Length: 458
Image (cartoon, rainbow, N blue to C red):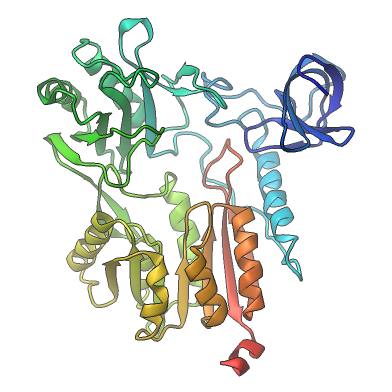
């Protein structure tokens, strides 16, 4: 198979980028604009040199469209690549997500049952944060995104997946940058200042804007842009995120963040606890659905006054607060010091400082903590790559009575659970949640219990 070849392809699956996947001999072909059950003549664009995989674009249709095909609601679909499943019916999306989790966990022995995916209460307008690539197209700064698998810039104005206030504020940022005082950063030349814009909103309608620019950007020009953005209703503050990275990182872990106008954070409530959210804080982008998942976690573990928990990768403390308001005692570990401090301040204001404590430390500190903190429950909510190896080894060597694992990566989840099973943790429940409708992403809640053989060994 070579680029330029034309073949007939029947799609039988869907990948994370919304491409239909079919087999041509021993090669998986991923085709743009082809859904499972659809057949078309496709043109091969690229063939991998490292795996039996190729990419193609659908051409002449051979048969009817799949009954699950719908008209995408977003004007930038499919160019922006952000919500690549919008052409698939919502019920079909949920089943594909369930199968993804089922396939990943099917490598375990025994393979656990996977519950139906808990659907999102809303398909559009749920994202509370958006990151925009600043482009100098036409000589004027504009906000958008890179198309999938490329650096081709796409205008995302009018996006319907973000909260309406996020899209309105993005338009105000575009207008504020249109004066031409700030040059758009050119990656190839390593010249210019403006790189990205980040807009995040609370459910109450407060907005925080981050102008991501090089550390050499002229502050007076940034302040003038910030003052213009502050005129937009709901905007509580504008900050400057200094970014001199040579990679595509939007907010580097050690970025200097300076207030240009207004407040450095906005208020949000997590499990009813008021928390300050900064531009670099980790917070689920679909907060209502995330809170439903955390409440379900608390139900499944029977959280109450006798529960002693450690919450790893705790972010701003959403899970720890969910447990604490039910009477449990939770210690949260978070690598980001500003997030740990914000969670601690929130606990004090809410009168929960005795039940929800936070410390700025990596999750790999777990072995040290377990030496002095008797626990009934350990909660882990790691990034997509899964558990830190130190955490995985510790949990396998000393399994807690209960483990609650919140995962955004089914494949890394399966790897981690396999090692934890060897240590004596048995999966009790697997419940996926849809936090990002229109995409292939799925969040999975797993509850595991320490087996009798693990108790005997300890």
